[in-house]
Image 1 (cartoon, helix red, strand yellow):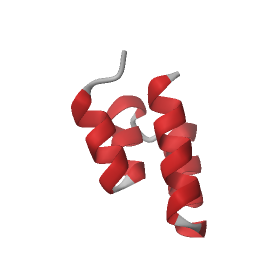
Image 2: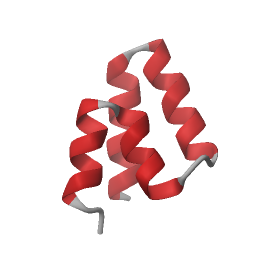
Image 3: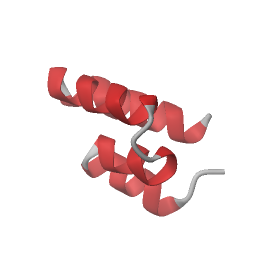
Image 4: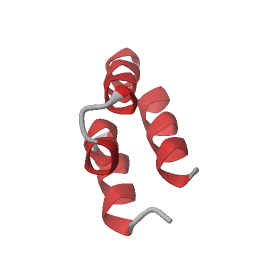
Length: 52
């Protein structure tokens, strides 16, 4: 179960929330790329990864 802090960070800045859980892995870089392409895709991906 994901923690409240990770979800809160993911809402404000999606790559930070993903970084707290996975470090500098593939999930972080994908979240960073999606956030650069548009905030909403990065947010959706971060929440999905943190809650699955």
